[in-house]
Length: 266
Image 1 (tube, one colour):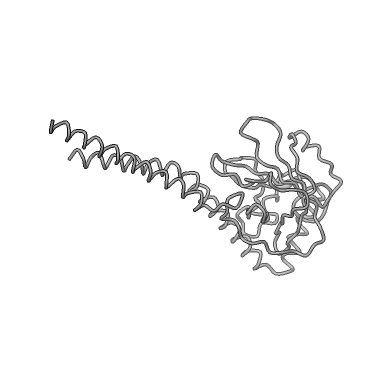
Image 2 (cartoon, one colour; image 1 turned 120 degrees about the vertical axis):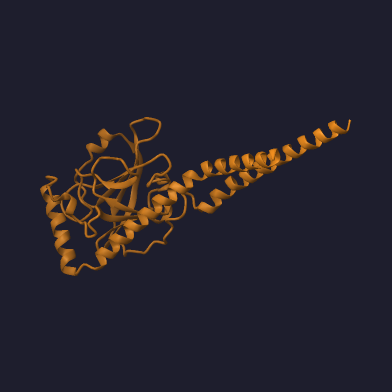
């Protein structure tokens, strides 16, 4: 009976350790699944729009950009699915395919948000379009953003349009510097990473210029980790460590039993 209880306790301990180690992977997969659903819903809703409906929605967005007053209809702009998604951001090099939500400043959920005070992601009015990431402990929508370099490309899908942005600069800037961004360039999209855990003010900023390049369809790498490592590759050493721990505990238990038997014989 004691042997059975010890084995059961050992197994429970190993399962708990492995579950704790795999928690970040599980949370990340859940967030990626939620993002994929939002992306699919946005693209399906956009595909059902007629060309006239697309033109009307884009015209409303351009009028909002020209007014720059953050009107009451902000939440309805470029929102065909009705779930707050205004675009889809894709960075093939990083395996990022994320919905872009209307900004509300809450920061409760890890996601990519449009900064309300900036230009909407469509042609019209001066100033760059700012997209900001909020993150959780185990998930960052802009993970690996620092691996982008000048000359790399990312893409914005807005309704039925796909725009290509070439990275001009990757730098660290303070919120004050971002607030003073020169509004003279209407073809820029700026990606702003979440605030660092270190508590510093500087944030990673990627500036991209829209280029007249034929749109491409990036490979769906949304299930890949930054750096190209798959979730399975990440989970394998954790599972192996758990099995090794189980084998070690079982070996110690058997050694103790052998020692006891020899002691009893003496």
